[in-house]
Length: 97
Image (cartoon, rainbow, N blue to C red):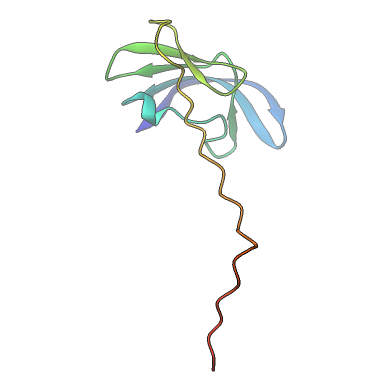
């Protein structure tokens, strides 16, 4: 679970409000992607607190969260994997009526 603790409006882009956000989450798995909240885009430089560890993370311009407490930890990228392309080589299955 995550929630925005504080936000500051920066601008509008592509019909969404770009905000600099302070986010709290139960764990890094709950960190949001940049367009996770309806109507908002989370700006680079936003920060997130991992409540389970107490570590702070900062959002890079690549959309990845970087640990600011321990630089040796790998970055957190919760961007969903793209849907696989349909395989056009497989024939369609049809039912005989």
